[in-house]
Amino acid sequence: MNLVRLAAFIAASSLAAAASAQSKGPSDPQIAGIVVAANQIDIDAGKAAKSRSKNKQVQEFAQLMITDHTAVNKQASDLVKKLKVKPEESDTSRALKSAAKQTAEKHKALKGAAFDKAYADNEVAYHQQVLDAIDKVLIPNAQNAELKGLLEKVRPAIAAHLEHAKMMASSLAKK
Image 1 (cartoon, rainbow, N blue to C red):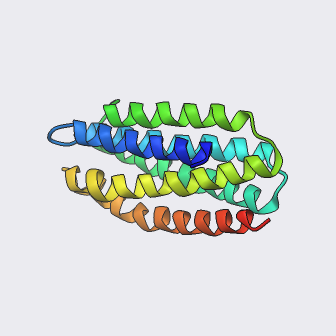
Image 2: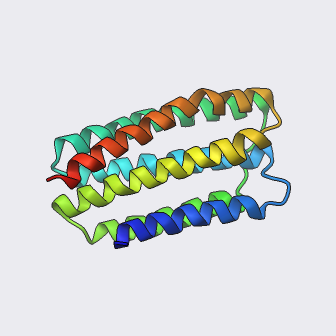
Image 3: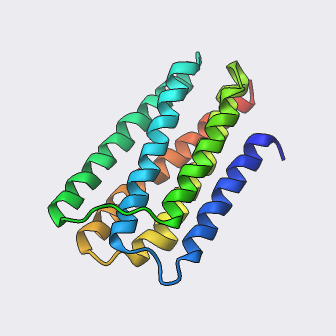
């Protein structure tokens, strides 16, 4: 298992452990905090990839992540304002941020094709992790119908990002 896959595995394990540690599941404010954190992490990763990669495929994917996740964060922000809910930190959002920081540190040491491959592999693992969290933790625990609706609405985009990331990773592995 290479370093990038190990980091992605640790990140996924951290999210699963943190999510299951919350005995009755996250509250709606915590879910909002998780959504905002998860999107911001991918926005930041996309910005880093866009500025560091010379690969057109990676740059285009990174821009898609910036655009799509910024839009989801705006929708989430608008919804929490409407509902008068303040996003709250939770073990899950903290685990996501911690794992993202570790991944970013590992990526800083990489250049060129090694960076591109690490970014692509991380995007596959990250989107799978987020999709699992949406399905197993966030949607089942969302109490507010509009919040649950937002999660259900963005789920297909996250699944599409996962498939796109898999194609990109596969393409980069062949080079």
